Image (cartoon, rainbow, N blue to C red; front, side, top):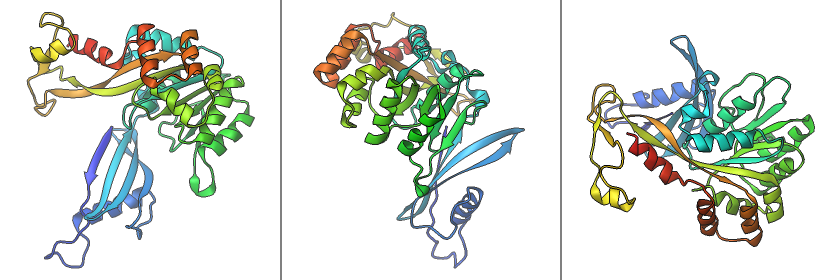
Length: 339
């Protein structure tokens, strides 16, 4: 969950030399996150924790200077107790079964892709929770550690002392891990070491920023990973987005725009469409909560042949769909038809 708070740090002409209320809020947040109070001209990132109704809440803080003052974005981090299962995330049954099958593999790489804020980390942590049993050595590299989980050895990167994803991953492989979670593959070195780890008997989970599942393969190519290594290491790619849900307290039957239905080859009778009328629970928006829409590309023998041939991302996506992959927009459409 994100809370975006724009802080205008400029002084009002009649205000005088003291701190404005907004500046005071920024300074207080910096104190809570142990940031530099004297620095207002460069970005700063931090983290703090507070108690609410007897529960601990972790908050990630990002501050960046603008022409009007400092802009603050806070992210409320999910606790380990709230990580449930793939069903609660909204994965369709068929995709869930396939993903659980991939997680049961002894080695290989599973990638989750999508834009920032699309729920990739939550999906990966759900997979880690399923794998987290006594006797299995699970190690993570994160920037920062967002969710603290028992029995898992979690490492936080620190660029100031040279503790990068690649450097930490290289060291973790000497710790005899069974499962390695890399928060994000950001550069060529991290990509190559992660692929190498998957080829040498480790189960590797990580994320990438791509628009769809097929785009992850092109991204790995850009990072210098050869086709034979991608085929040998990669098990599957999950691509996802988060969409808003109709408020269940004010939901009512709805008739979608016929033009929109025609675009998907549907009619009014094909589905139990719903929309929110607006109520106090959803602040009169008609929408409350979010859920994921997903697609899963498995690297079958036919897909590996296409990777070897170096076909385009569009051709890969078309072949995967013909082989049975359900695209994200179809998953979203199916959920909309269910109201």
